[in-house]
Length: 200
Length: 200
Image 1: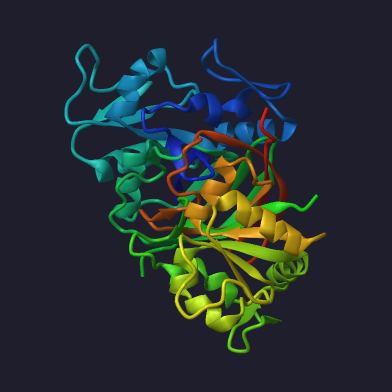
Image 2: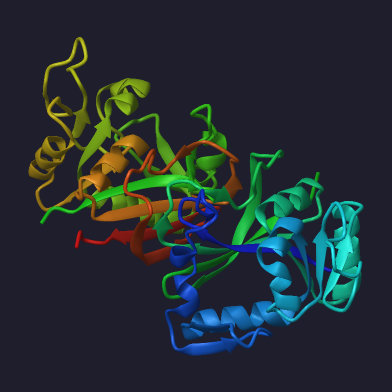
């Protein structure tokens, strides 16, 4: 079965961005606080982390077969310049195919009939690998639909005070997870992984 | 120098209580999910945790010499029935001494001239041991005053969705911490400890 996971870098007080959708200079310090390079599909984006976090990033890359993201994230990044840094196809959940884009190509598939359809499509693409879900609102929808298997948190020692939560507007809170089943100590980041309990 | 620390059990999304000041049945499961007993000064309160968390609780008890709490926490707990479970004196920050209580006795000292005075008083009581600060609002005031040395978080795998943050209304966010300098994996809880950076 293709696993569906979500992951994010999160402040100690639970935010994946500050209230102005920024704060990344704090959250993503661990992407550049070491000397072990992890290249990405974007030639201008290379992570320079501790050896531990580099292993963590490489494992993430190797196990990810497709991504599901919200339209907002696609727009903010301008479609990652044409190809996601993880070098996998991205299924975009949207109300309509953005102007100037084909409904699907090797890099992007625009799904307009909802989150369950998007997850099914991404699973078909990922095959034996995992489907990663990105963006707090989309992640919340996926867990609410009972389709999420794991939550991966890169916990960063900063208090942002306010901001965008990991799961925005989660309608099924309180939600108990199992774990962490993995705790990896990086430098300025703690990599934690939890399992979502199967619906009773 | 007497160290000043704050600690709390926190949900993965950063809350020490839900929006109704509850949610403790989720947050404090780790207090009773094992078979190693840790007694407290309250004969009716014994923790039953994993061996790992029991060691963590014992270390906390042994290193704590005094507590500083807000009036709200004192009122909610009705003064812990006369003595705090950690069996140390508690300095209560308040606008006025509560009716029926002496300004100070062996168990409680009521300080009406502010947080710095309360911390100084608690340090004098604690001596070589630590001063623990409890309650999100008070903890925020202490870190804002530059008086906090460490933040200890018992991170629990539940998403509460909304609630009371670890540092309520933190005026100096974003605040970067160092660490974690300690990561201890319990059962249903991850014990993390961070250092507050000294003011530049």
